[in-house]
Structure formats: structure tokens, C-alpha cells
Length: 249
Image (cartoon, rainbow, N blue to C red):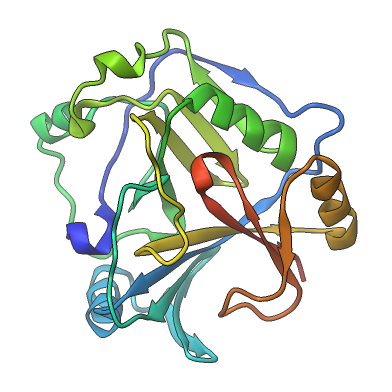
């Protein structure tokens, strides 16, 4: 299911050190949603509908955007005419417990079995970055996220193994949602308009957070990116990743 950016990965932990947000960082946000653009949106809705527990999953629309919700997990799927997928900071997403962990090859070697229904409330993201530690620091200092770094970080980009053999160099926690960050070589294009368009976080004190972001030099565009009710803003994070800031209700 590469076209759906589906990763069904259960990662084992390795020694790490945890870093906390600075005193000037905003209060820790909560993960709000993942937003996709896909020309195969009817197929995706049916696919995930078969995988997830129908008793715990709700399918609905917000305007012309389709949505799936299960617990705290919210996925929006825009009805796109095409499904572009160039190298960007959002590599893929998955379900299951997550920690700093092993490579896909080792995971596949264990032949971990899975079957429906999957626990969609355990959504996590796999991100790419030219400088994972700097990206993780940005999430910590600018968004107030909790960060875990490995005890032995990976080598420089000149020694990168194939993507499926790479190990995450940082784990960022947005609420209960983990963002695993892997090193990649440049360039990375903006996520906007691609299959995985952006992810969103929910914050309180919307005006205060927007002011703080602008003071830090973060470009902020007020408005709705589609599928969100209430006030929101778009910002650009590390490696041109689009992040929507949604006012918590």
C-alpha cells in the first residue's frame, strides 16, 4: 500500500535520552489530524474501513473533505484529481506502538503477524530530515513537544543506507502521537499538494501561540486549509513540512 503511505510497523526500543521543551516554549500541543490528498479516496476509505474496528471508527465529511475518526485519531482525505508523491518530510504513517527503533529489515525478519481490526488510535508518523537533531529541537523549542534522542546517533548523510534500513535518529511526541525522524539527503520538497499534505496540532491560547510563532520568525498564514471547523493557521516546520495549528475546542 505504498500509494496510501501505509506503514504497519511495531518498533522495538533502544537506549535513548529525553529532552524537554525550553521554558519559553508554548504549552505542549495535542495531535489533531493527518491530511492526505489522494485521487483514490473512495478506495482508501473502504480500505481503512475494512482494517479498523467498525464499532470504534466513524466515517463522515467536513465540507468536501472525507474523514475517519477513531478515538483521538483523525484522518482527512482530500478528493484530489492526482496523487503526487515527491520526496518530502512526511515519509509515511503507520499504526502500533512506537519508540526509537530498528530498521524495516529487522522488523520484517521477525515476521510480525497482524490482522484486522487495527488500532487506528495509535497513529504515528515517519518523517525525513536533512538534520534530524535540529528538526527535533525545533519541535521541542517552537511547539513545546517532548523529544527522545538515541544514545548513539546515526552517521552523516554521506554514509546513508537504503531508506528501508535506516533507523530513526529522533522521536518527537505530539501528545500521544509519535513522530519518528530519519536522516535523508537533500533536497526535500514542500509537503503541500503532495499525497501527505500536512499534519495538524491542537493548541489552546490560539492568539498567544500565533504571536509567539511570529516573534520567532515562523511564517504564519491564518485561515483554513480545508476540513477544519474553527480558527486555524498554517506554518512551515523543518524541511518544508506543513503544519496546521488548530484552536482547541
